[in-house]
Length: 193
Image (tube, rainbow, N blue to C red; front, side):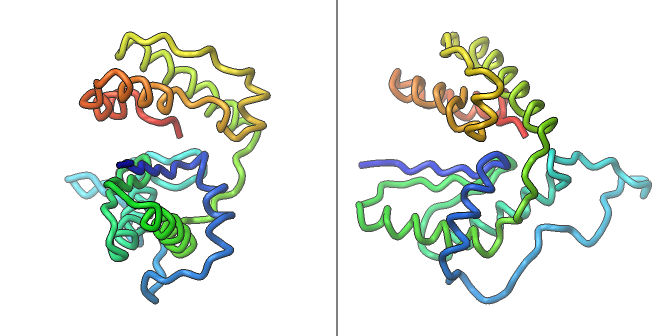
């Protein structure tokens, strides 16, 4: 049995979107935008500061986008949950179900994943630096010594695909039967954005 964990964060969103654009969506007919029409306010009615991701989308808008994607995947019969880091799909799946899930994910992404502009060189450098900080956090939290990071140039060229401290730690925790620590690692050392 395999558990499929799928996460779409800003660094991976562009690659998933490119795949998704080639497949016609089948998760309903209404279109939705991740942008909220109202401005956030404090309890006293004054305007609240919004936390904004590197691409100009507020955290709330990002979560709403992931909730729409997760809902679309659930409508196709899969277990999907949304968080501020992306969408996770889990469960034991046969090979046929795995293939269907891949198609459903692409369809749902094509409907709801906001096409983000490519990050600027400065944003890429900041994301690389944040990923190094995440690695340090994960080492302190779990006690593992992680492989050293590649150079910034190599990491940026691969769009972060050659080195992901969280993916390494999740693999190690799973191998060592410490899976119950994964949510703490994800909460205390979240994916950089």
